[in-house]
Image (cartoon, rainbow, N blue to C red; front, side, top):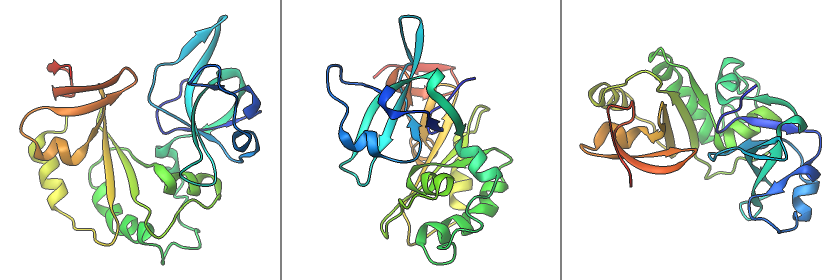
Length: 216
């Protein structure tokens, strides 16, 4: 089984986490935190023939964030941002008609579905939908990813962005290309290179589908 950035994974125990900064003790809030951890963008590592995947731990607030690695055999189950959408986990949320994030999502769904590409919900909204653990605040963004494994031209992306207008909620839409994640607005509106975030780190590319690449 493989896991990708933004996937949520449930563990048998957080005591088995290895912090990204070696020789640092695991904070108490990590051990007592509930819910899954989120796969982050970095390379897996292997120690003593055991594979570890990079994850981030969420606590009770912004100050409680922790980068770590976990052995894959401690993973119980997982859910991807795309599965959150397939299962329409927002349908019965108590704030569906009240919170700005859900209002923005409701207005965007027809446009997202028109793409014919898989899309998913990440960030605080995705975490809350998948777990039921409150994460959203009045100022929360709506974080989305769109499958970009096949080419999406700048012209088509720009036209799609211009086809809707969402107010009252900041949007962060990432396009998952073969090279990594690109901010969709940056890909659609910039003439030259765009920043791609991959497991190997950030880089500047002129074509996230591999025809040209220039390292940062």
